[in-house]
Length: 534
Image (cartoon, rainbow, N blue to C red; front, side, top):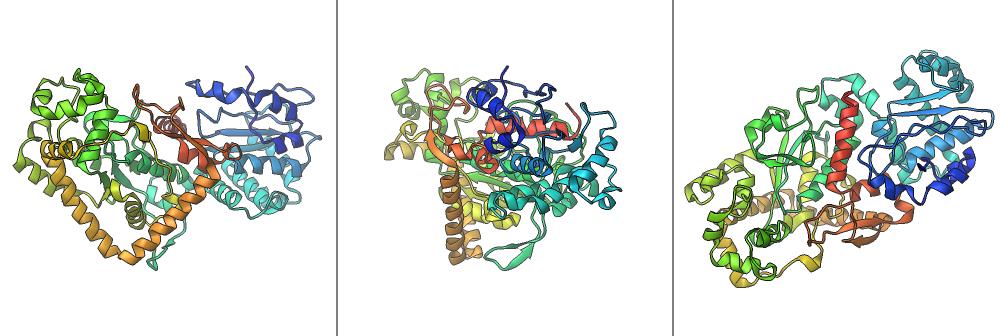
């Protein structure tokens, strides 16, 4: 099978692989998307082969565990340095996946590859033997090599560009070093990853927080926030609570039985679909975890849920009048629903843990809302999404680029159905509990905005939107609803993003545009590799 080398046109010219690159570049990515497992390939060892690289199809998996570079006389040290830097910079090697970078002149990697590589590493780095003689671990060698490349080779490839700086900085803080300092402390690892930052606009200095439970509410733009958390967790080598398959941590109250058991006592991020259960989540999350969620006006939320889940079809109603007919006698349709349809009355309260038997009980609803007020540090609002992210950024002490976003899993505008004023009144009445929930937390949301400062909020929203526009211009060629990589219900078009040609190897662009199911699968694979579970 023809597979694509992990290199740019420039790097291929330097290494003699340009012809192979040209032959393979057109057809491979489409094929790779269809594969359930990574493609792993070694080039044949011929006299013309100057580099041997273990790699995986970038559309399927997001990290490279081992990079083995075989030196020959045909490759100058500068060429190899440029090659590695380009691979890292354009995102072919994901920094959090690098465990080994070994330079070797042997025709095959020996079991004691680290020892055989050191003399050649000394020669390659040029006059640094004294500095490298104490390097005995692969992690030490890889870090030293990357640091040296950063210092000595960057002038030849646009030194100081923003993307390169980000990539190299991230590479130098890869998993092996972060884990070595304190394997039992996720917080210590996070502090090693980032120096204390100034929370822009507030003038206060704080340490970024790394532990968060984000309850992912259906049809409330929660996939977009989840993507933000995916990126942050991946970049900082954090541990996710993950389902064994798919993207659901069960369909009932969260229980650790529904997750993959990794060899850690606590996790950093819980952000997949489940039913909220504070007690169960506290069993796997640190005591200092931030608890956050997002709500939406019950009218557009209910229309979105009804349409997205094809409720008209499930109730044998005509598609063009399904919601209208349902609202004429919702109690009847609710009664005849099978056990699988549980989100059709007060769906937000149900997701937050109110049992189905109490979804029509006003006293139980009031008690649940009071309970939730004490359980969540931040309840965001879909209608004020950017303001919500500013509050989240402030709470977590993150940077603006940590919370930039492309809207994920949103229906195309053509699929959004208008709701008449009469239907809106019926939806609010039918979902009395969700209406009260939304109104309660909308008040608390604006109380937080007032405490934050309206002028400061306006300024920071503008800054966030400016960064969003920057990434849209940098990354996106087109918004489409014809991308088969994005799952969507039959007949419901969902928008996704086609990247610009020049952004196809841009890590940030790819991560921001990555659909939930694919990104979840990548994170699951990364985390399993981290703990030797593959």
